[in-house]
Length: 338
Image 1 (cartoon, rainbow, N blue to C red):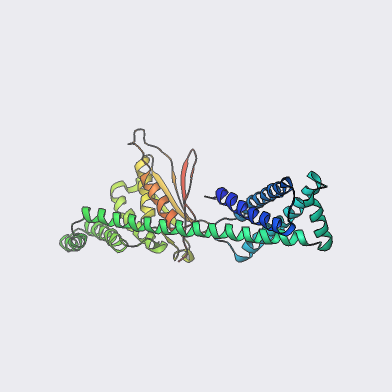
Image 2: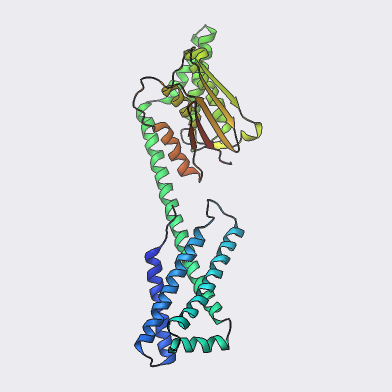
């Protein structure tokens, strides 16, 4: 969210105006109080307008990670604007008080040095832009620290939750392997193998914030093999991922959550099969399913999708996109470069 430092701008403009007014009083000596107040009022207004303009320029074209060239261009535009405002300020004196000491002094200074307003505008513009940049960077650093602490807290809460649910996960995993050797039926053995693959993935990625797309796809295949025993032909999943995209990363279990949500909220039967298409589209993983909503469903809290959104917010500048039509529900997950 873009933040405009209004209070800081008013305080800074007031301080600069006070210093310039004192300097003018020392340089010119006695002059009518009305002249000094006029100078201070116009100068303060100019500085506030310059501050607002520079902030607008600073936030323009500011979308995520930027190139150094764009930052320099933005700074150059801001400084040019500040210079133009400086010329406008001195022209304003000539209009509102053409016979004042201030107007005469400015006219004399301009005749001596034609670029004097440009120098003044550049000096104040550079100083204000530096302050704006410093405040924005400070805010980003603080935000990053808060997000890191929040991520650590959520990670610890997740681990605590897993510890409460699983007295000994490795014991269960080893028991599955033992059970596989005790079962003679091929289909049952295969089911246990897929279940152990799923559980192995959960154990391996318990402490990870990201997983490769290749690992996610392999895990999803094992997860789907288990679901197929339940739904058979009623569940159709098509996966089309190019080889070059498999090294990209995304939060673990993101695919599993989306598949689980699709099954939870739609009818899955041989008469009305649920079709899920997982494709690669412009550095995003697209998960689309046809809509055949259940007539009676439990209250939809959206916790699964919200969980994915929250993890992306902490891990990446991009967030998942959702699109719903009369026949399809689509989620696009940004892929993170390793």
